[in-house]
Length: 361
Image 1 (spheres, rainbow, N blue to C red):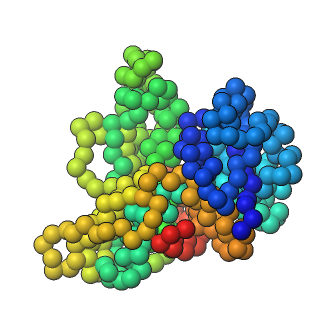
Image 2: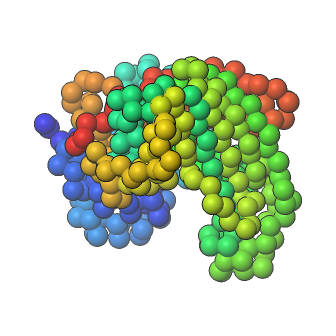
């Protein structure tokens, strides 16, 4: 197939993982980089043999570029994605689609208006671990999926992150930071979500940074840091998801368990691409580890972009879609809204459960 030419906006930490993979995918060609820090963009271009370092405006105006890979900070996702779509480019963005549901809606509407694609991370759900779970479910190994649980339990990023304050600001917290991995996995495995409720609290109004270089500084917490969510799926299944920065003593709970009429599945960490995948069939007294059926078990950031590029050429739907990301964004806000209003929240934006991955892409 003819290569899809990509321009990357944003050369921060996450760009390294994308560049390591995308420059080697034979269906992609990264032709230009842009960043507010031109020196940073120049160093990344030199390291990966990329020919052009441009301003954002120049990159968006470049007729050679078909897809913009948006790796800016979350607060800039909407403005950059909308500008790229306005310029006639497809967009693949890091999570989340946008900070607000309204901006997410604008992005999807603009893409439809211009007949362009929007793809959004995480693409970990396309890796070998979760796709093996998807195959087990689709093959009926656990029978009818009935329920699931998910746990993202940590003591918070202030012990290791060099600049953790933004993760406690409005619009952040454990749900908006890590929720996309879990919710995207749930939708990939169980289909779209229809209704949510939850309880969200701020356990510690102030947090002390214990990492360097800001050791000893205090953070004012503006967003809930322990969120208990209940999710109702269109399929009839239900799930419980707890995301927390407040678990100081650690946890022994799994990342995700999925319960069916014929067995239970332990799903690997949705922030990774590999296993292990474990299955306990009804009537058995122990779990067995299942060999992974799919490839891309290593660090494979960019596989969602690759799938979208191939889908553009093949004129088929891509998997890490903007519609899925918009539902994830609305669900995260919906849980907080439900908690504040002491009610259930009906999800307005549906999506299609993405097609399973082939064993090799």
